[in-house]
Image 1: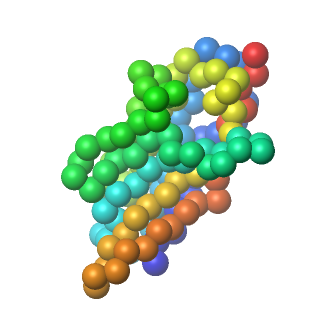
Image 2: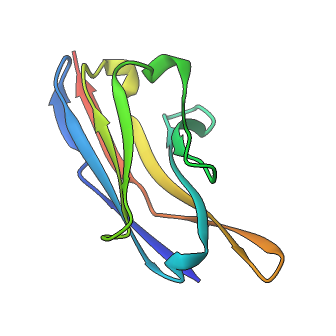
Length: 119
């Protein structure tokens, strides 16, 4: 099992910055990829950024150049630095981990953290 706890959300004005954190616990050795998703009211959950199993990173087009994902393996924590925030970035941000054990793949989600960007 892997547990994920997000933090760092809040209310910020457009153009501001926030840094989200996702702390992982449990069988963290089994995590092969981890990333951030977001869901705005009335919209589907979408990928924001991911740290992939091969060490590469991926970003949604809408956040490229503004958001940066990073991972601190010693702290079992992944971060999302969000700069130049826009009102359309308002959403609940979720951390997701993909873990592989004994030939099976598992997905784990955190409970999310609210980010609100005012215009």
